[in-house]
Image 1 (spheres, rainbow, N blue to C red):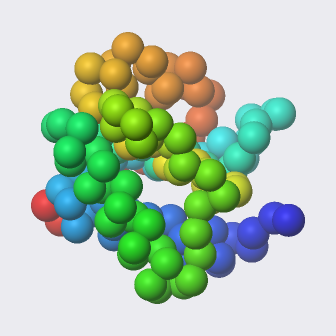
Image 2: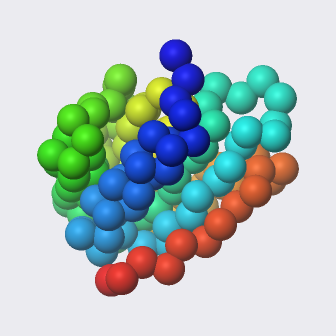
Length: 123
């Protein structure tokens, strides 16, 4: 099942709002639609300063999306240590990292062909 651009834009908007609420940092949107054989259309990547903040950002995203558009992730991984939490919303995958883990895995570098937009949030 694919989402329309409008519903994807709405979901992205609410995910970003959830990140903003808990002061997530270095947030980017990666558009993967022009890359062949991808598992989703977009990555949203941000970071928190501790496992507590990463966990809080994830909970904020879940609450914001659920409240606003009654959607929930298909799967969430990484909540055990909250160094890198992946939230799968189908065509949109959210990565919430701690800074050192984000640098180590370098998702942005691995998906360097994606169109990347740095987001300035109202922190």
